[in-house]
Image (cartoon, rainbow, N blue to C red):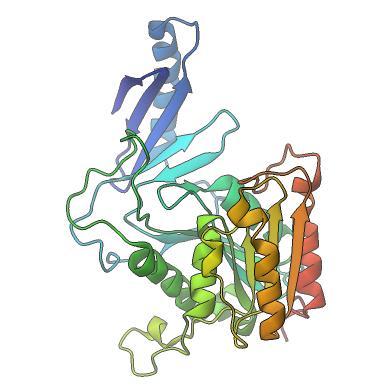
Length: 338
């Protein structure tokens, strides 16, 4: 079922599919075109999208694994569908997550290095830049022999300005320290529990995150455990400490207080990012050095916040994955699994 609404200078179309966990939101910027013409064109697109949504999954689409198949703790009673906004570059932004999951990108068997990473997109804790800071990154990693898992985590904040993508659920809101963090914990345990199936070394599973996702990476790097040996759920018996952490223009950077037990860190941001990141990340680098933790710092000249990875970049923003790959190689994390 499709509907259309106007919000200021934006025309928004909402497509509700038969899957109650997913609702697609297509947003069109205002144009001189008459609304009926745009409506006709967009509804045609919605018809095609609806058919695709109801069709069987595409054979080569990356698999999606729910963190909790029977529902996430803390999400009881929250059943409104997630909402996906696709921009003109076909990049998705996701809102209103009630069913946290991992999207799985595995390398070809002849390229697999045994290394794995959970990728956490950013978005200010109210949205997820799911492609530019998630799937694009994961695909690059898989193409280079690294198993990658994009974490779709629950979101603690509402979109600013009462946007139409805000949740309609009642009950207590999610929090960063509890619900978002618990999604990261569960993701670490889940991937390690299926390491044999996914052919990766659980001792070489790390994390990387962008902006708000970087904040979560820091949290799991500081607050982790060795697993719960007596847990009823075998997944909960797995440990949660990452083998490494990639902090990409991380949010709440003043909370990054490494200890001698912190995982090795790769730090990256743009020189034109806001001061709490571009000016504080060098201080974070010094904190890692003081703690005796291996660390790399890279600051890209002329670059601002939120660049992620996009195919149309033709500058330094397209080159950081190779630098990150070299860092993993030098840390001896890319040797083929024995």
